[in-house]
Image (cartoon, rainbow over all chains, first blue to last red; front, side, top):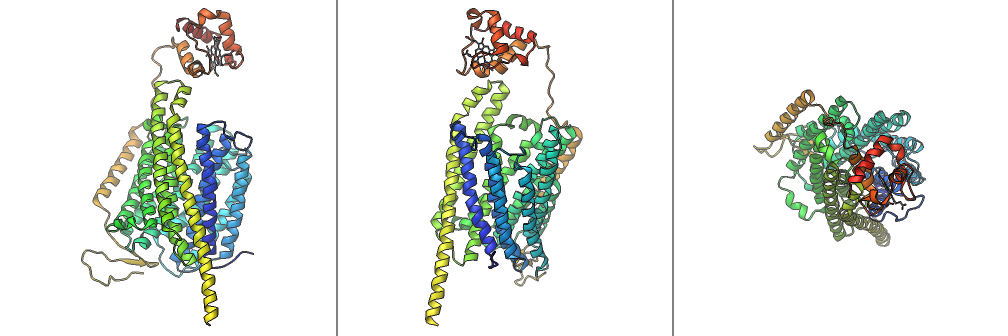
Length: 457
Length: 133
């Protein structure tokens, strides 16, 4: 039933991922549109609350996670110098994972939610998704187990770490948090998942991707082994404590508050170490970004990563938090990591890996360029609208401007966000179309070749 | 798998070759080391000396402006936006009893919000409305 064709699982995870980015981002665009026209599609299924949480869950656990798994199904066997432990199991886990995501999607539209940000799916979906994740992790760990390369390249540390951390944070964030009755503890448990889904899954797999892609795309050696070590162990040590900064100035004990602020700032160490390593590797290769779109996506991703990680630690400070908390600012920030940094590296991974799998280069270079520019410019318009909005909003609240008036003040920014968001959304159609064409043409070419060989033989 | 660097290059440290990817052993840039130390020292200092939360100053005086606080904090959310009638000089138009009644029990599209306040607070709001024009 499930094929064990070489690289099929990697390819299929990518295809599913790209279908989900379109669905997930259309939910996001609808959310943005509802802030302009609040009565738009106001029915039982698509109220604001349902759509917003569906958007968040789909882009993270459907699009980004599937793109990550797709990359790992290619990069891990390559780095381990072996083949995937089981392509069949890989394809099975893909189907299973997608069924679970569909269930979660409809559960959210139906109004079922566990009200944990980044963990909104109800319990019955959480359990199944955990099983799906564990199957994927099992397959990939087995692959590393049968490796013929003795040393583990740094990407592998990140991938294997992430494959352990994701199920762990998923368990801590989703299960006890639904049983603990009262607010503050629940909030802390929930944010353990919320921030570690970002830090010990999205960030770490993304960084692993970059470590793989950079030397391959530039042909240059990785700059420093020591920096890789510092970056990896520092993030593995400090990241788990970032959750409390989401409850800054809230009713949490002040030692927990401090225990959230300090690691947030200390994160500057792994982030800068990793970036120094990337940019050291890039030395002398920056000119290539002009023509090499995957490399440009990767480098733009690292730059957005830097900015996200300059904002993040600052936002954790109680004084800064008191201005921007609950404003549009946070939304702008929250998109920079998952979209600006790590969707970009995943786009690069797709553009690098897919041609290798199907045996032909991407169908259209122009579409890749369009994908890059629409994504980048769209994101900048989107993000700056929200950042300006957030600062205006934050200070207006402090000034005591009546709340509804502050809502009305947001009109132009909310419109700006929707325009940027539309561009980000349109960009993904270039990706989807290009992928579709590449795979189709590659198939035709293979057929023709086979025919040609049969005739000449 | 360590591999001696074939082309002997003075500047370049020995490279490892892992999974076909070369890894150099450049030193950590000095600036970065400095940043690491600054961050570490800051972290220890913050842990020892800072409260970890924003300190909220207790209200200086007992709240004799309670009426105004309630009015700007709650009523203006509707009454300053065109969603509800302007309340400037409302005490000329309506009797004290009627106004308090609207606040307590609501009227048409204005919700009842009496349960949020004590009678004394509602008196304060009324006093404020008398001067609000």
